[in-house]
Image (cartoon, rainbow, N blue to C red; front, side):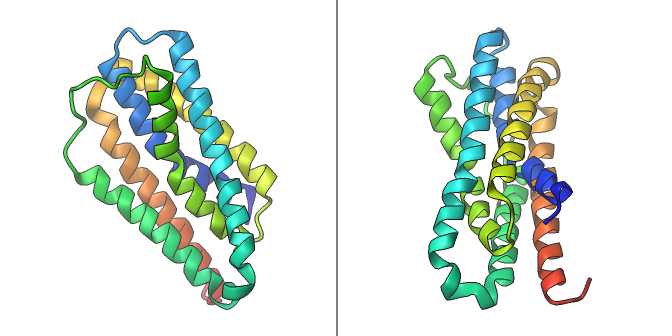
Length: 187
C-alpha cells in the first residue's frame, strides 16, 4: 500500500474527528487554544494507536484467513464507509454543547471516534502495511484535521459536519474497492 493510500485512509478515518471537533467549535464558541490543543492531541493519539491494536489483533488471526483477506479488507472499508455515509444523512448536530471542559469527556470522544481505526488496523496486516508509518501518518493527520475542525466550527458552523462524514465514507469505500479490484486482478 502506497503512502498516498495511507494518507487517504487517514483522512477518511479523521472525518469522524473532524465532525466532532466542528461540533466542539460550534457549541463552545469561547473554546481556548489549550482546550483545542488538548482535543487535537488526544484525538491524534487515540486515532494513531488504535490501528496498532487492530494490527496486533489481525496478526493473531492472519494464518486462518489469509485466502480471503482482500474480501475482509473490502468488507471492513465498505462497512465503515457505509456507516459514515448513513451518519452524514441523519439529523444535523444537536445544539446542545459538548461538555469538553471535562478531560474524561474528551477521552471518551477520542475513543469513540477511533474505533473505526482499530478495525481498519486489522486489515493492515493483510495488506502488508508498515504499521509504524501508518500510526504516524494517521495520528498526525487526525491532529491537524481536528485543529482545523474546531476552527471551522467556531467560524462557519454546522454546514461542514455532514459533508465531512460523507467525504470520509466515500474515501474509505473507494480504498476498499481498490483493494478488492487489485486482488481480483481487475486493475
